[in-house]
Length: 472
Image (cartoon, rainbow, N blue to C red):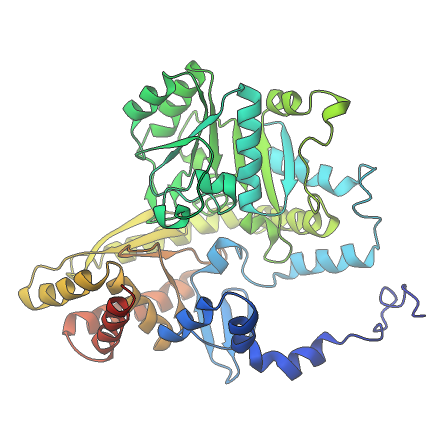
């Protein structure tokens, strides 16, 4: 029998060789997904030309088998806040594995969760306690449960076009109907328009509202809360004995140029805050719900209720070590300040292009969360092309920009939401002027091609139109 300590001492355990497995089967990646996972993913990737094979990654870059580099302006939907394989996070994970800790015994209080909570709370001075789960949607589920229990009320308000996750509770506060269709019944929740204080007050008057959950900047479309909305909403909610939940799963940990995006507005002190994504360092899934002491004490009100809310992998040593390393890097390498300065540079330079290109209508966002919106051009020739695309399916023009950015300029981006003419940039928070220059060069070249009215970009547009029509 193999000594279980052999792997800890540095020798390879018998029976499994990951390197050999990847060498033997790695080329089957798309076929394996098609056969055993979501069959539409490889189909979609092939349709838009995104069926690439990336061999390795570091920081804000990927490399393919030919050694060509690709600039990552997507960061795994925000998970890779520090880029890929940051050496400090990587070393922390080596260290925690080598320590052979007695992890997840369930009947002890290991130090790492407490240390990570302490460090996270240092950036959340009005909050007191943390629950650790394994994802952003789990952080939201926790906040919804805690708010409903603490207030004794069933209903949670959310904003149109919001995205808070895809499990049943978080889906109930999802503002996109396409995600919700076919999964009813959901929780008793009600949407309001982002920034609509009158609608918020009207719903609060019913007396059954537990909380409002809101993203300071919505991921879908990159729409920021109107100035003053969060503070005014907080005042209304507290007047009606309801809570403010702020979803910082994507906007938190420096993304917008402050540690939390709600901190851009003076006086905002949410009752519950959800974080995840970048806290993982891109390695081990981790989510956190940060909240006020009285809420936690009401949920965990007695020893009988000690396990009334828990998570099987919550607070595991690897996730906690990754989170501690991430927060250390954020502090030591001035990541928040870099996100603010680099984001300002990128946004200003993009905004300078709005008057040059008819298709480009607006640039918005904060820090390194930027939305580039396209719209109907003025000139007749370009307007007719735009009309054809819109008739087939809204959002095709943005997709026509994303594809040549990858194919010709090796820059990975994303359309910000279904049927949206918006590209969202959420790159690693470690990028600098070099990456800004590269993105601007590629984006400007694509805009020039789009306004020339011909070429490969519009050939691809015709392909997208045919595909959209066929899928109706």
